[in-house]
Length: 602
Image 1 (cartoon, rainbow, N blue to C red):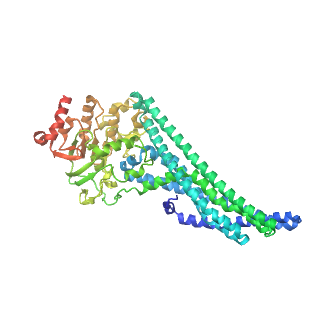
Image 2 (cartoon, helix red, strand yellow):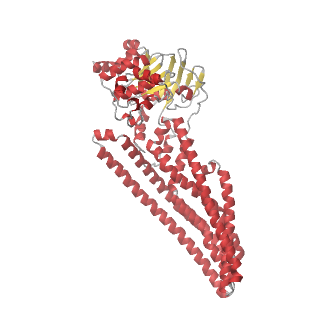
């Protein structure tokens, strides 16, 4: 029931050693508290003057204060350790997301990541602050008390010893049932989070399409399922708590009966018997606390387990293997038998509820793409400032190929997948490679801040003259001049408040400003624009593509005339490649794709 990976956390050994020392001292404080309390009570029973029992009372209070002081320091220390550890975990998970890119976020889910990094961290912090003291307390305190009880009354010691394994057995059985229910509850929480995040991200589209109410019902349905699952967890937790309380109370009652009969028969002495009776509840207290806190921290346990899974997710870290370079006319990129698929073995481990078909809209899209958007045996040889057009039917793998070449997705591991200049690489998830590229997708991401920040994204230290030059090159001069606050005008997230054409021009201004980046990725950048706006942007984009290696995925035929080389992709394979003019004459798949496009554009 305890994840062994817990003991591999940072500074876990130091923390466990300190806790063991504190709890060992606390165990003797509990022992002293019980002994001297019993002595004070027996002295009072024999009507001794207070002066004769004053020392016993004083030692009892000192033991009580020592016990409470250790508890306070232990709680402070563990909360501090939990905060530091969860902060480190948050950094590690963010690093893993940055390293893995789309391959991690697509498998885990956006809503899942949000839940994990926000609410999940609070749950994990609570779990860490409680679980370690309870485990060590359970391993030390009962046995010290039991050894002392055996020295006072052997029968009572055997009764307590025989009952303890039964409590452990019931706790394991009910704990597993609670764990199963809590896992399903956490899975429901993740689905609810994913649906809610997706609804917020797409609320504008949902309202336009008239689907807001229907999707709201889906969120409500998931919230109801989560509420019902929470009640199931509570039922199991209450049953478990009742079982522990019932058997511990029954055991103490049995001990009290045997002690009482022994006192009546004159076989036992009052002081040892009272000490045993006082210490019996303390003997069971650690396992009761462990059981109660186990149920209270199940969500934290589930969240931490998923964090461990993400941290163990294999991403190829080769950021230092590719030397720093600048792509130029003599640079080369070779792709050898590249294979990529979304449906790998690592994906299943992130689905927290195996009964759920999907964990969110992101996963739903990826599950659909897993069949058709894989890549098989991709071979390319590229040199210098080539302009490479990528065409194919919807779902053929164009965007997937672009993401793999940009280093956002990791292909099947092969040390010779890529060769950049003279360096062989398994993946292009390389800092020095990605520092050379600019990516302009269909919907360039706009941050909810000023236009200046969005333009200077790649080069925040750019001068005013350089920014002005980029704005002019992107055709944004008139638009910026028409704004009251100019470059300091704030826009909404995803570019709310500006048109699609203006977003594309801002993305182009970014690219113009990043003049040290000589690799351009265009993933259907004009797909959502009308033809007039597209042709205006084309005039702006043409100069940008000079002296750059360009990858251009498109459905629009007129762009192919500007390409030096063209790749035709079907079902994840390059079925034809060559110059556009060669393919127009001899390319069967090329003509099959371009002739309908030519008719549509005419």
